[in-house]
Amino acid sequence: MKTLIAALVLATASLPAFADCAATSFGVEGFQVTPNPRERKISLAGKLVNKCSEPAAAQIRIVAKDGSGRVLDSEDGWPAGTANIPPGGSVNFDLGPLFRFNPEMADFSVAIIGVRKW
Image (cartoon, rainbow, N blue to C red; front, side, top):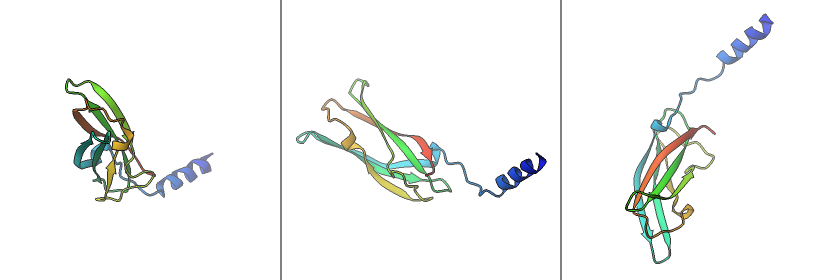
């Protein structure tokens, strides 16, 4: 039993150390809303930036509200898919195609809701 515990301690100690990346380790820059009522489409585009010291990916949520603040739609997405973004790196995104166009949409917010290493 002591041998097993010693082996586990040594195995754990030899694992590489990873910095914990959190939602605050990422940022969204240049978020722009571009409605196209003629084609009943909307573009919700920006750039997700990794400010963590390790490669990681982040999940974002965009919420669309009407003029009175009522939520009309909300969608989540992983801008980098199943790839990690390198430290200081970024990836462009557009979650607009996930939304059903609604002319009452007046206010949009974007938040980072999850972080993962693939």
